[in-house]
Image (cartoon, rainbow, N blue to C red; front, side, top):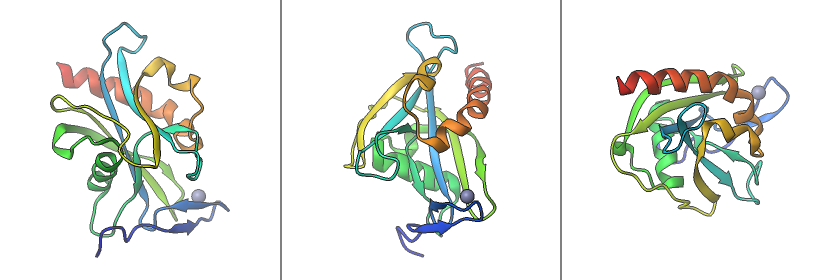
Length: 166
Ligand SMILES: [Zn+2]
């Protein structure tokens, strides 16, 4: 067990390769929107730097899970590294497998801020980190994996966020 031991490519039965020897995980963080958007939520998205794999696309902060981590720990660590949001400032509501290729899985951890946070691009892997109204997510050039899972993630997120407020 060592930090970063999940870094590497998996040659998947789908014919493509995916990043994360033990799978990968990301954090979908939502907050109540200040203005009125159709879902009333903003989500925290990251613009992947142009030089990275699938660079120039928007997605959630995340990456490879290390061998000693569960998906939740991996997602929170990656989100901290990439956006500066401390794990203790996130209230985790749920997690779900957004991509399951058997040889490789992507877990999305859904959460809301547990206190004041100031997300920002903290590594060279990010060109930008921004709160995006949920209703505008699909207007951005999205990472293909995130784009494919967003239609399933959005209703789950809305349901969880509503429940967390009551
Ligand atoms: Zn695959």
